[in-house]
Length: 242
Image (tube, rainbow, N blue to C red):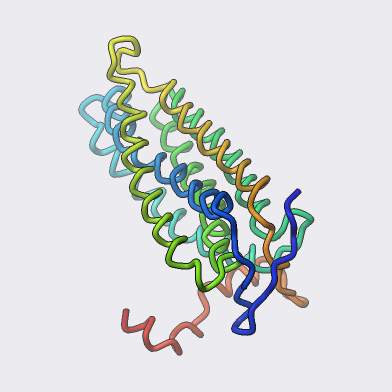
């Protein structure tokens, strides 16, 4: 288990302990995994809906997006907000990252092997749920762990990994077009699932745990989640303008 204590700076608890190159890489590489899913999923989704729905494939695509969009929009900020208040022996972010990634692995395998449209849509909604359960808390690792002097490096690595993930995911899924696979994307999809789980395990093992969770007082977890959408953000004029 990595060291759980992080030296904190005077401004809003900003960490001051310098991260190693391996830790900076590990904080960023999970972005590669998450975005590789969506870089490859577009190829899989279009082909699989055609295979299962025939001429109705485009309608199935629309249905999938309409059903899953609210799940993605709500899950990520709520999961991130709840993780702010969690305290475990593995820190406040890692249980969400590892648990969400394990569930993502199952969702991708379900998508890859789905034989019916309803099953396909169901696992797609599950994928949106599980990836955002991991994504929201994972995004909190940078302010948790990266000192001010390394923010530029961390941001650059994150941008690089997001781009590489989109391209890498597309290339991995495109393996399904090879004659050996015959437009069967099952194995490439499972490969993406393995990448997500492997990088989540690496994040859990090699990235510091960060500061402990904030006390939630007598508030229930449901209330903490709902407070994510509080109107207090309206006081931040720059954010409202944006």
